[in-house]
Amino acid sequence: MEQTIGKRIARLRKSRGMTQDQLAERVGVSAQAVSKWENDVSCPDISLLPKLAEIFQVTTDSLLGMPEKTEIVPAAPKSSGIHVNIGKDEGNEPDEERNGFTFNFDLGGKELPWFATAVLLFAVSLLLNRTLLSGLGEAGIWNLMWPSALLALGLTSLWQRIGAWSVGLTAVGVYFLLVKMHILSGFPKLTWGVVVPVLLVLWAISMFVDHFTGRKRGKRVSVDGDGKASKELHMEDGRLSFQGSFGNETISVTEDCFRGGNVEVSFGNYTLDFTGCGCLEPDSALDVDVSFGSLTLLLPRSWRAQVESNRSAASVSTHGQPDDGAEQVLTVDADLSFGSLDIRWP
Image (cartoon, rainbow, N blue to C red; front, side):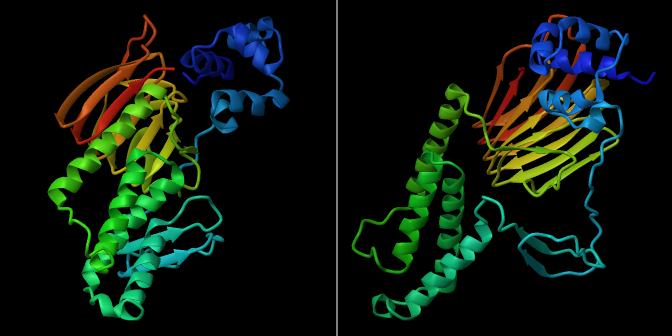
């Protein structure tokens, strides 16, 4: 049976732990009006729909029961190579899909493109090594390339947020780049046997800070958005497929009936917000793979979570709890390596 707008309002309100009085106060109507909506006695005025959608963090289409528009990028390219697209996409799509490696940089946003930063650092270090610093000794291209990439990752992470991990990664990148350029030839040399444990300690400190301060991560991106903030994000027939790397984002997933899917995270901090979803299909499972990163699942209070994990230097934590009468169960099958999984209820 198709849900009415009143039933959708009731579901969204309950999933966020709000009372009818609280919703009425935020919308600017009486609690009796909200009660009439949810009991299908009356409908909210059309002018109130954008406000309701904003409160519930869903689209007006979803609130009205219309199907969400999800952009799915085809995975069957026709031409190979490395493609670089700098600047905003003005809608002039290529006639053929392309494979290989594609880097899209939106220079109008606030994110620092790590690949462009790495190329710039490598080019500058190579130029200096071949000209002004040539008397110190010439370094090989590879010896300058990987420290430049490491430094670029640190700088882009530092650009998003100043923390122990971003500062440590930047410092390691600077150190090895200067060593390879023979500028720090007189300093004690560090080995990877020392650097890797230090980076892991800094990363752990950063996760502890996030955990105990409850710091919100990144920006919110809707499933029906342009998808630029994530590597790969597909939603089809209620099933989610998400892959994220080197990012720091919050993604809202809004589906009338969620059926599970798979999530892969590496070297990044991601939050998947399912509080905008409606029902949960029985026996739904979410396969999670986290390596050197952290993933937070924000679930509706009408859902329970059953976690089955295979961990290697990783942690699983929960915050909050579902409603006492919650019967819908999401099975989370997690494979964690040097990472963390956090399940939260609002």
